[in-house]
Image (cartoon, rainbow, N blue to C red; front, top):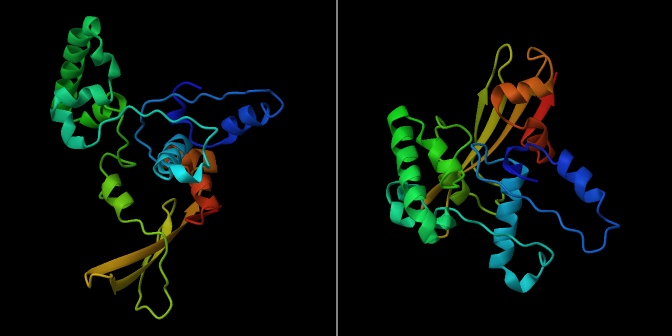
Length: 226
């Protein structure tokens, strides 16, 4: 399945793998560059398998093979010497000069046009935030995730973002606390209500906003309403 990174739900994937259960030594190969939306199933599978490799003693993912060629940091956008991480063909002497020049030209062109995110996702294979104009950086959000938090007995601030027409309504709960090192932290839980009547359908609403709301609803992050 080439460029599976643009597939926003698991419906197509499920149809393929469910039909392979009786096939001996069956294989399902997923290939893709990165895409602007980090919430797609392919990105989640990639993260899951990378975590499995870090916990090699569990042996829970022994039937899967994950190979990732990507840059480690956005700052490497300006360091062509590191681009072999995401472009292994740079190791081939007969292709290196042509490929490197093409990559540098693409980088410079995107910088002039203000679309460097396209070079970073498609050529350096880096997952960015949902929207290039997002207030928060994806890497910062991921580093802030903790496995669990008890809200019982905690002070709480509640915020409501009430919408009109086709916008989403959201409610957020913010819990200020001190971590084990005595540093002030804030734990945030949020839930959105997603109306689709004005858009015509939930499909149209998802395409309009660029967010897979039905997938997020499965995890309890939102409620899709008419």
